[in-house]
Length: 108
Ligand code: FES
Image (cartoon, rainbow, N blue to C red; front, side, top):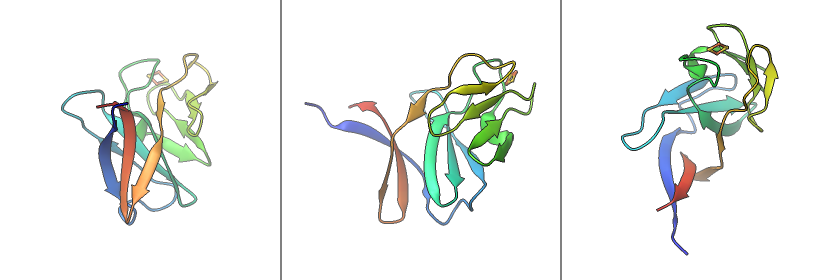
């Protein structure tokens, strides 16, 4: 079985609780990394409703509110929870190694 490919997202100290950041990738869609009460999560950064960066939205508890039409997603599960969003956002498993935070994006 191939090793899962990992994308470096940030250092644990780079994001305070309640913050999100966009991480560009050369070989795939940008990822949004979130710190929710000290736990890191990762989703696709682009909203499923339109061309908006979710990391530029407002993180309210474990919901990210898109700043374009104010739809929302439950970050841990990717579920679309606030209209007009109806299509769930892709989530990625997050791994930490020391103080490095990675998203697991698939098989290498
Ligand atoms: S683009 Fe995100 S809610 Fe419309």
